[in-house]
Image 1 (cartoon, rainbow, N blue to C red):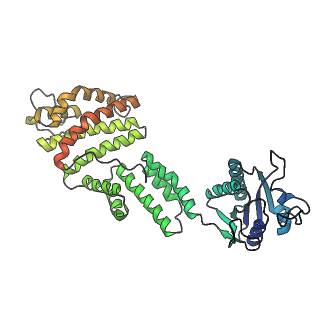
Image 2 (image 1 turned 45 degrees about the vertical axis):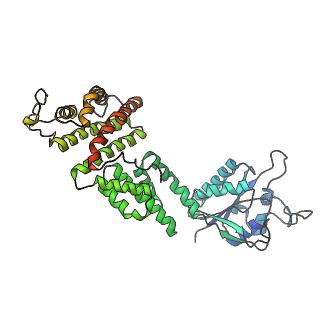
Image 3 (image 1 turned 135 degrees about the vertical axis):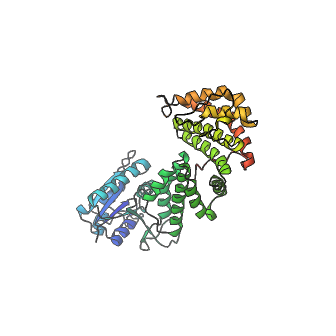
Length: 422
């Protein structure tokens, strides 16, 4: 049978501690006590553990002590307890000494059952021990309680030891770091962390953890352009989704539409929002690379939809006179980003043609910044200021034209960004 270690805070009343020790019968006890008061020099609660002779009053109203220290009252030998002193109301110091007690218990008694009783001591001592215990799943919280006849305290003789219900508090503390990863769109990190956590015992908390894990998995898949996988997970949880999450599920259905023109129209904006997420993470080279692909893909989509031209294999007769597009080694005419936009200018009459006619020089400028990136043809890293200027130009000049071109395919506005909070 594993040993039991008890960690308890010591205050002015001995009775709760005597009840805890005689009820739980620990093999070792860590007493967290207050030492002498630094201002008055008066002894703190440590005297109840280390005091000699009769050092404890049976009742606070007694004239003098009539009881020995707590180890003597409970039959603890000297090797069965450790005294750790702290300041009575210094929460940081109490938290640190509580962590020290837990660490010593884990180190000295690796297989033991660790109980932390926060009944005694000042309010700060109780709070410090509780906070420390919440951070260790191996620690069970206990308190001494019973029926009350008033609001002052449970009367001596009517007390009993009880396990404190802290599963919800511990659960919230454990999942909180993974909730915050959503703020930077690190859904994969959230999923990986939640997968490592042991599932709670209660059905409600277990359901919450699994929901958070699976939503993290869904948005991680979406962030990696795996739209089908994301849709499958979100559809499974459809009744539990928020309105915003349901709206996202609706857009996922556009992203996986069987009609390639409708699907690609939605995917263009999905790529743009993906680039914005990379920029939020400070990955400006990644963001610019994605926006380069957005400009290229948009031109390819427009030419395919409006002219039936595929830039990967352009019929020679479809190339306007004066446009320099030469065949590759296989004799195939292909158009890169800028040449594709030149085709749009010469062969279409809509918002896209108007855009390239007005924005050709800014487009060339931002393409040059991209070309110098280490993710393109250069060795430079994209500065935040360069990204901000590029993104402002996209938002002001490019996205409006793309919305105009995609409206006929059911896109009535820029879709919402993926969630940054749970």
